[in-house]
Length: 484
Image (cartoon, rainbow, N blue to C red; front, side, top):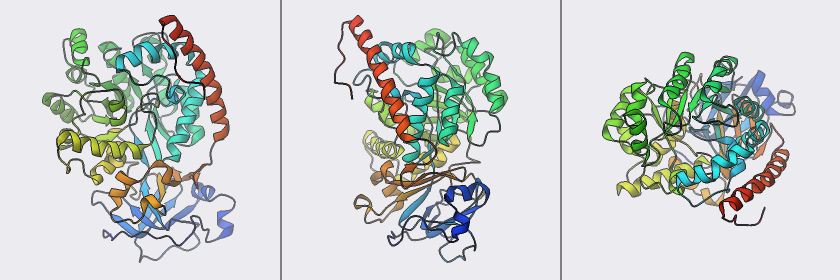
């Protein structure tokens, strides 16, 4: 398979069914039980060789990628065709860190330091408002936003895991989620021990689910004891599941961890055997050379969240260039919509590339292809799912995104990775497949009722505002801005 010259093509509609009988009402149905050929686009494979097939095709059989075809290869007959002419065909993007239900807190509290944001606004609002319905509708809203902007897999840390699971399954997105442990009474469980008691049942229940990957998460070492973090990580190890934790996000964390454990954050995680493949260190900004060496030796990965970190005024960029040089898997994350305030990984790619050029004083730092790999195969490696997702290679799950380049902002097209990182936005996504199923077509979500999700979100918004106004009044502050 040769790396091909890339050219834009603009001469065909998006969807063409070769055999109408095979297509029926929805080509997505054909992919579940049969085959689908995504043909005529520029296929960005994201294999180790960096293969790009201009005018290529991806053959989907059931939930998996069955083959790749070059422009000159003969096409199979009798297979429904998704015409990708004028599109980039890319692996689904992988969002390695977020709090999906917090889309219902989007814009609630902005322009303040991390700990003020958490302690004075987010934690009180969560205590008053977060319940199963809040988590379901907030997670569903975020799933819609992510799918429509090209993210097919995301990792989540939040409460009421069964309701979050219900939302992601309804939406049809691939997600890593499960028990979330924090060292004070949470909306769903009164203690870490209570959360962990039935956590194994959740991991067992979804062990073989086609799109929900069960895992565990501990909030951080500044909110959760090292013993509870150890038990949370151990449960993930026992199930061969991902484990997530906020780590080294704020300058004060080292001192706090040292006071509580006698060690720094990364050293403490290493002491309990948590730095293993499948461990996701969210943010990982304040890392020493010794920390980077420990992470590399253990095999853990880093979720880089540049937009959230910038917005919260974190005064340092994560050492991504150094981490990659050390062989550490690095992916991108949006964090929650309450601190970003969007879940568009195309925005995140653009920001990551430019941030590290600026902080390193080097325009060659984090070139576009490297950043796009972070958003796909890098994220898959961080979540320890690179045998299933992250590239368009035969045998992997058919998580595929079509991005329409027939737009003023994407014309002309000289270099694929340049467009993907510096020019494209989530709004350029036209069609999305997850596990071989078409879940977004022509920019429209097919799996759930988006209007209903937005209506529910507006209703929760009124409740949120009422609680925040009460809290602000008690604190002697004001809540700005009229309701939407």
